[in-house]
Image (cartoon, rainbow, N blue to C red; front, side, top):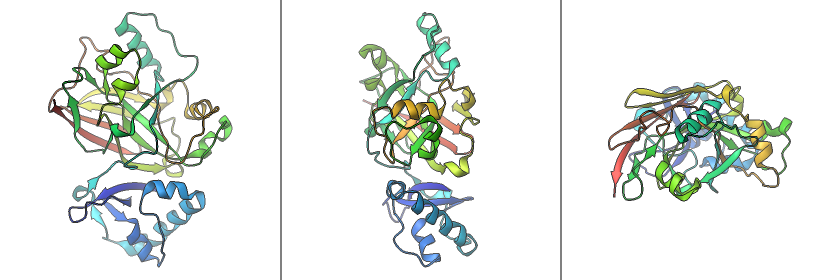
Length: 305
C-alpha cells in the first residue's frame, strides 16, 4: 500500500488516503465502497492498530479497486502533509552511514577518514517536520549555511526493545523519504548535531509511506537529490555501512522503539558543505529529493529573519 496524509481546498483537515495511480482515495471512501466502518482516519492510528488491521485495510483497498474508478482526488489538486503530521517523538537519525559521505566529510574537515565502528545517532525535533512540497524556511538570523541530505526513512510498525537483527525488518511498517536539512554553522558552533539539525521546518518528509511488503528490498534503492534541477547527490542504499536491520538492532538495545517512530538512515555523498567550494542553499532554491520506489519531494527555500 502507498499511504498518503492529505487535505483538500474544501476541507483543510488532514486525512488518510491511499495513492492509486494518479489519484488519492480517502480511506473512508474505501470503507464505504466495501460496507466497512471504523477504519483509522490517520496513519499513526493505523500503524498503532497492528498487523491484523494493516492486512484488513489492504484487503479492503484491493477489493474496492474496481468499484472506485475515478473516485478520489487527482494528486495535483490535494495538499500533501507529512505522512505523520506530528511524530510521537524526535526523528532518529544516523550520521556518516555511507562511505562516500564519511569520506567527503573527512576531506572537508582536513582529518583522516575513520569509518564508524558503531552507528552514530542523533535526533531532529518533531517541530522540524514539514510536508513533501512545503517551503523550507531559511532562518537567516540563526544560520548562513543551510545544507541538504537525502535519506531513506524507516517507519516502525511494531514496538520492541532489544530487537534481534534477524527479526528487525519484521518491525518495519514502511518506508518514506527524509531530507535532513542542516544548518552546518550551528552544527559546528555547538559541537553536536541536535541544534543544527532541528530548526523549524528543516525536515521534509513524504510524499507517502510505502508499506514494506510493496517496497521490496530497502538495500537496493537509488537516492537522488537535485538543487534547481542540478544533481547534487546520487547514491544507492546498498552502500550503507550499517544496514537497516543492524540499525534497528543497535538502536533498540535498551531503548524501546514504538509504532510511528521514524529513522532516517543516512545520506550519500554530495552534500553542500563538502563541495569545493562549499555550496549552501539560498532564497528561492528548489530541492528535489527522490528515492526509488517512493517518489519525489519538492521543497523551496524561503528566507525568514
